[in-house]
Length: 94
Image (cartoon, rainbow, N blue to C red; front, side, top):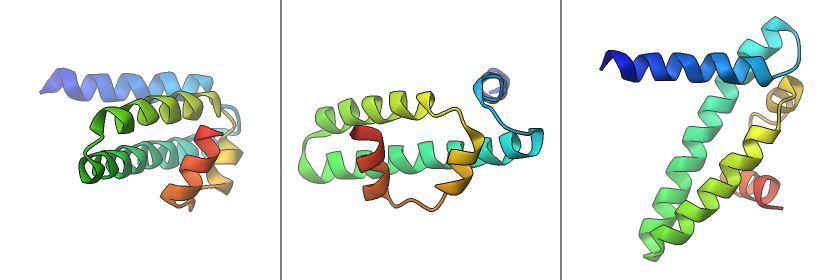
């Protein structure tokens, strides 16, 4: 259990090192980014299970998360924090 939380902490540290902006923006943007990743995961898993195409949904998830990693500007995450699942899919898959 402890290593699980250590992994989460390490991930936040690694994400913070790649993000640009003020210290306050980065802290806020990291929170938004992590919530967005959870939202993407939940949306795609539900979509995959409903359609019976979980493999396809997981491939799309991998693509979306890879694109999310390229977005390192804290301001972008703050400005786009209220995107819907459909908006996220359009942004991250185009």
